[in-house]
Length: 283
Image (cartoon, rainbow, N blue to C red):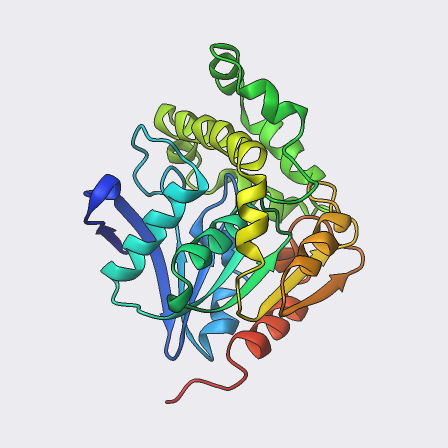
């Protein structure tokens, strides 16, 4: 797995790990909260037949650096910008899952000339009715959040991830929990996760009006993919978001929870390939 160090501003020197495969137009996969680059393992290969696919570990997650920082959507978007500059990508389509969708939209709002298309899977973003639930709000309490973050363990993680699937497959849950478990549950990783939850609570609360106004100005094709049984981000939130984008298409999946790219990988891969590229990469 390659690693590079970002340059400039608050992300200077930050180590970022990523996967890259394929040849053709650039497609960047951005994982959700607690995710990591390899969580796209069912999607990278099929998309790489038509594109150069990058799957990145966001700062604070996977094997990327986990510095003390304010892990806001703006911070993640700046890190994504640094990553694209570092790998020499000037134009890309972004595929974001859950939190990664909000990061992708934030990047598109701040660098619209560099984004060609957006695909948003099980997405959430500020500016609409949905907000992080009571558990996230509890984590914002000083000291209490730190204490609760220390209580996490593999059985709890498995239970939480399984609830996000419509019909959880034991091997998929085990992979999402167990991959690089020691690194992803280290003290710096727990601190980064907690900082992200706290920053998101502020983003979704205090910056709702700013996002709603900005999204109305975004003029690029957007594909929403959402499971009708998503218990983490309700389908109604997806419908509300899609109405706010001028060039949005929505694809609904039945018998699907919060991981459409895992639960229905072949179907979603087909939709993504057609939307993002629509042709095979040159040989």
